[in-house]
Image (cartoon, rainbow over all chains, first blue to last red; front, side, top):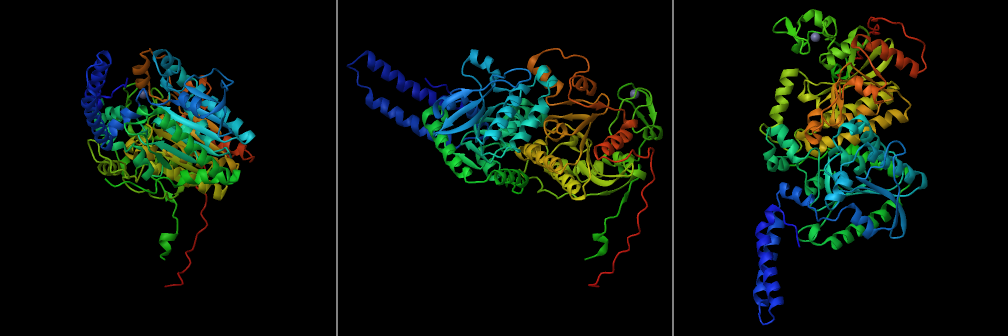
Length: 320
Length: 306
Ligand SMILES: [Zn+2]
C-alpha cells in the first residue's frame, strides 16, 4: 500500500478503485474486470506523470520527506557489504540519528556516514527523527579522521530536517560540533562523495555535505531553512510555506544551476518511494562511477579542488 | 590610472559619522531603563553606566576603539552578484538592502580593516548587527575571505567580531554555503600559523556560530551575549521545556566549555593586545590608548601617463 501525499489524493482514488476491482475479482472468479482495471491503471499513470512533471517546490519538499523513501539504513543494507557500524564520539554518547562505520561498495572499503530518520514510531524516536546532536557530528568527525588516516573514501548520505534544537544539544556545543564537522570535511585528503537522498536541512546537512561531489536525488531538497521556518520569519505566517519554498530555490534542479549540486540523479516516476530498489541501484551506480573518477586524483589535489569549489560558489545567480 | 584611486587613505574615523548623530541626546537602556546621556554612553563604549549592559556597536565604532588612535584603513571586499535568487517575500530583497544601506550608511553587514592595535599590526573584521541583523550572505563570506587573504598576505593575525542572527535567508542556499566558504578562510589562517581570535558579541546565532565564530584559536565573548545555534524560542517550542536562567548567554557558555573568556568591553582591547602578542611571541605591549602611528608621508608618484 502506498502512503499518499496530499497532492496525490486524486491518484489515490484511482489507484484505490483499481485495487478494489482486483480484490473483488479475486473473491469472485467469474467477474471480468481486467479491462476496466487496466483503464484505471492507465488513467493513474497519466495522472502520476502529470503530477510529477509539474511539481512545485513545496510538493518537492513533501516528497523529500516522504516516509516511504529509502533512508540511510536502506541504502547501507542494499548497496554496501560488510557494513561494520562504528559507534560513539569518545566523549559523551553515541548518537543514533547518525549512522556510520566501515563498509564496502563495489569491493572498495569506504567510511560511510549518514542521517537516519527511522521508519516507524519506535525507530523514529530512537533515531530522533534524523536530527543529530553534537555527539552525532563528533562521531562523524572521528570517522572522517579514521578515513583520512587510512586513505579510505568517505560517502555521506544526507537526510535531515536539521540539527536538533534542544537544551542538551546547545549545552554540549551544537554550533561548535557542526563547525568542526564542516571543517573536517574540508580538511581530509580522501575522495568525499555526498548524496542528498531526502532533506538537506541547513547547517545540520552542511556538516556532512561539504564534499568533492554533491549528488542530489531529483526530488531532494537542500536549504538554509525549512520553508515553514522561513515563512514564519519573513512572512510572519508559517502557513506561507508554499511561497517560502518557491522563494528559497531549494530544489535539486535550482541547486545544480547554482553550482551547489554537482549532479542531479533522476528518480523513478512518482518518486523514490514508488521504486525503492531502482532508486537505490542508481545511487549505487553513481557512487561507484564517482569513486573511480576521484581515485585518479592525488590527495593534495582533491583537497585543494574541494576548497576551491566552495570558494567559487556564488559566481552564478538564478534568473526569476 | 588616477593616483587617488590607487592610494588607500587611512580612514580617520569619527564617532559621529553619518548615522551616529543622535536625534535626541538621551537613550534608554533596554535592560535597566536608565536614561543615558549620549556622550556619556559613547565614552563608556556603549555600555550602560548603570547596569553594565553591553549595547550594540557598529563596526566603525569598534574599529575606532580597537586601533591605535582610531586609525585604520578599510580592506575592500569583492562585491557579489546582487539578489542572486531574485528573492521576494513581503518585500523585495533589493528593497530591504536599500533600506539597510540607507539607515546604516554602510554597504553591507561586515567591515574589514587593517591597522595597529597596541603597535601590533592586525587585520580586523566586524559584523554589523544593525545591517539586516548582521546576516551572513555572500558579502559577509567574501569579507571574511578577503580578511583572511589580507592577513595571510601581510602575516597579521585576524580579530573577528561576530554579531548576527544567522544566515541571510534572502540568499537561500548561497547564504548556507558561506559556512564552508568561511571555513576555508579560517583554514588559510591556520595553515599560515596566524592567530585567529573571535570576539563573540550579542547576538551570535545560527549558521554564523556553526561556522567561523566557533573556529577561533581563542574565543572571547562580551558579557551576557546570546550565543547559540538554535534560538531559545525555537528550543522552547520544540521541546516545551523550561530553559534555565542565563541559558545560551556568554557566562553559561563559558561554564559549558565553549568559550575561553568573557570579557568586559572596557578591557577587551587590552586583552586582545595581550593575547595576540603572546601568540605571536612578541614582547609585552605598551598599554594604553596609543596615538596613531605616524604615517610616513606617501608622496604620490606622478603618473607617467599624464
Ligand atoms: Zn542599564
